Image (cartoon, helix red, strand yellow):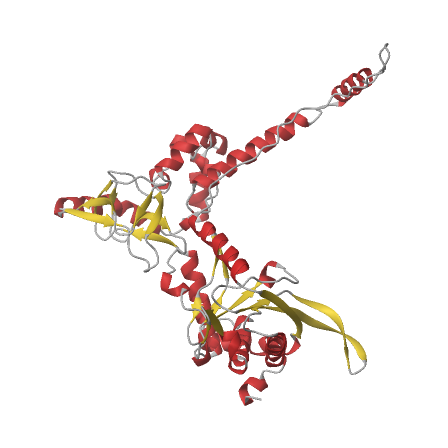
Length: 451
């Protein structure tokens, strides 16, 4: 029996996807729920797993752009095949569940195993289960470039080695070789080089004295790779925001003393009760909701000649991923507690790391928060996430001198930035919005008392 493998639907606006990489080869036996390949759309990256046990037959190679719903391969299923698959996969299952060996057994086994140099000299001796994790195209590229896959740390889903990892390894090797070629190995070599240079600058007879200097001709290495569909979409989205909005940014700073002290006093009890850490983002999500209620124009967008104001609060939280920035949306954030907001963010981070983020997780946001402080940014101007009209930028917390009650004291301060569409939000509303966020974070009791 043949079971077709199709590109799944990931949203109404997505019509095609890039078949980025096959994790199995044609003819391989696979088990149900085992990942077969990964696809990239202009919004998300998804891993596609087998629906049944069977033998894989690939119809479309990796690197091709295919329409949603297209058949890219099929699984040959059946009783005989299924039992054979189960029998073949059982040893690998036992390998994963095997208990750790005692130290004495490990040392005895290490003495019997070949040395590291021998393993490096014989890459073909790599275990079959490890080789199966590398796509055929990646293995072929590594063979062409003379790269030992066992020396590469993979950056793909599940730690798999990708084509980019191989190319980066080759680039690093070439850069190291160029560096060695440019070094003078010893003193004698230096003296000889100095002698050649002195000889080269001696004046020659004639009407004009020409001065020559020998220089080492070193080729500067470059690498080129195509932009992923997600990166292309990000670029288009940002340019669209710059072209179609009158974007302006206003700034303020927040004293984070209260929040830091609150987290210090209650973080253990909070984690014990809810099973999640108390981060900064939940405070800013709550404060943003309060500010959006007071300044609804920031929670709106322009549709033709109309202004559409949302009376609900779907807050997007920008998260850095391997293939680019994504903005999953916390829906009805005004109805959620601090713990529910932190859990939602943690779930999104897990989904992103496992390539399980759905298109529905990215749609419908009315306002966005971006935290550049996690990367060390002190100040920035975030770009609008169209068609939204406002985005809040958080930054690094840094001790700075401030004046309080006529005294100069050190306080943990954070710069915050609000970028907004000046077509529907005036400066007064933008400054008032950011001031409201400052008040709510510095004095959270204002949120509780609605003052």
